[in-house]
Length: 160
Image (cartoon, rainbow, N blue to C red; front, side):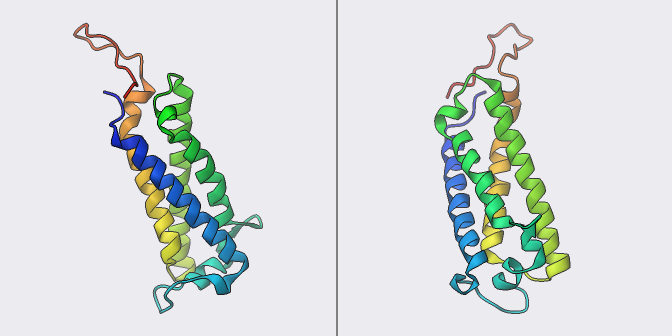
């Protein structure tokens, strides 16, 4: 069973959104006054984006989002979903797993260390989680494109 027709388009749109939000968050990391966000006891984007946890080894986390979403856009192009080379599918899956690992850390930092939630950051977290779900649900098929059914039917194709 190949990837469903909507999966490549949905994953590409989520990746484009994530890139746009990461660009915005990178800009506001350096220019916090440009940040458009509600500010109350629970939601405070400026507190999150200016916290010590907003950088890893001196690199803004939002900037790391660019390094995640640019290759993810390439890996989520419809032509990449149809690629016969299984490494493309493995790279997409590995990158999405890495993204989920990062959002687990970031959500934990927001909730337990910073004690504030950034709406913009949360939207990127949701996009990353949805990407992972879309990719992971397609992965059993793309990880074993040469699988041959036990009933003698032909191998499963990754073509859409």
